[in-house]
Length: 555
Image 1 (cartoon, one colour):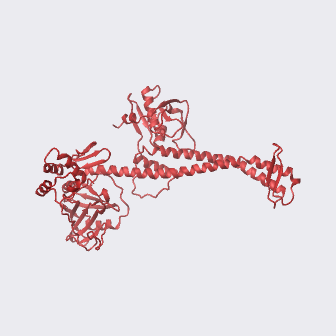
Image 2 (cartoon, helix red, strand yellow):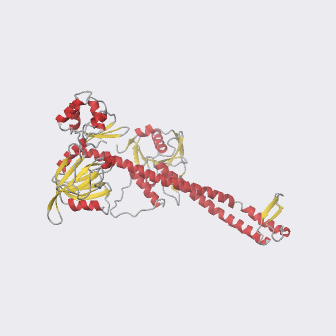
Image 3 (cartoon, one colour):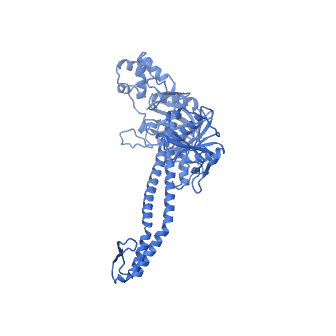
């Protein structure tokens, strides 16, 4: 992990400058492992703390977080002891991943007391401890019983700082002696001797010591204070320039700005993956049920369309009733149309007339059911088409667009609506993609059904040109210009329509285009479903590199 003791040292220096002397105004617990402290110094700062696995960290944040309406018990305890208190000191334990706040607070009795907030960022063992002035533990986020092999973390026990016999790299003499004794290319040899450094830092050290003295290289790394994120096959971040790995580089003015960006992207990516999986699971399951329903409906339709045979059996029973004796279970007679022998099953408890009447009633019922079954098949096929369209929109959707797709599925009844807190903010609607082609023409692309309906029925003018892949789910594309269009504009719009569709991996994809005035909504269906006329068709080979090179309007 990159949130090591060196990164924590830089965060600590930033917090000393921006939080020391400030008052804790509010404490929020977002989930079982995440907290927000609102601290007022010269201005109000928000401190983000997380105590879970590889995500364990603390930093100032500019991100907005949804706060639970009812605080958990541990959060209420923190509020009781910390809110209104002044942060008097910020301390790091050597170069370990342990940080503590000393807070001077006024208790409910009016007496001022000192509290310690100890934060340990040890991955799966990360913990938050609230202690008195003498480090008697008041409570811990994760309690550890006295008979556990680990340090005791229960109320009444004395907090014990973690022991670490490795050297603190900020003590120059110890660092110089350790580096002089190590002549190894094994990363673990260094991790076993130097406190609070990550494998990434050691790899950076190996790279830099090729060009300079090892002690000088190590000192340069831990004191550099360059807050950098590098993105290639994975995202790396550090408090020094990352020279041992290639990739797109971004630099930030502070460790908090760096950590805020890195983890907000990770959280957003995780949420996108979760939401996509949720929606895809719902759509796949529902579509499978619809396909099964359509299959059964077609079987029922085939059976219902056999009503003339039932009618004929009733007629033959009446024609040959003289041949039927009491108790007969069937009648074999000649079909007057084909001349073939027909076997007609009968209920021996009923008379011939009653058996014939039964066949007539079944024939009438099946004939009457045919229009109803056909309507259900059409509705089911339309529902399957709608869900196929939803599925095609998931791959390219951002988190905001996924939330809109989910909200649409709630409206359509595919997802059960959950009651929302009054404090839940209404999310701003996402905007359709907007591109500028080589001729300077603006092209809009909808990425979900709401955006498709909006650009087609609200943003497009009567003379604007509308594009869509032929006979397949895909995005609506609107060229904000009327005919005649340059060939480059037609091909660009067709590329966009093919790329943002289910046909993106195909070749020679047909794309229809026509003026917006030729587009009509389909009554009784979602606004994104339309019919059109007076269209032309262009065949295009989707080119992902071309789409990537297109200029977006906001760039």
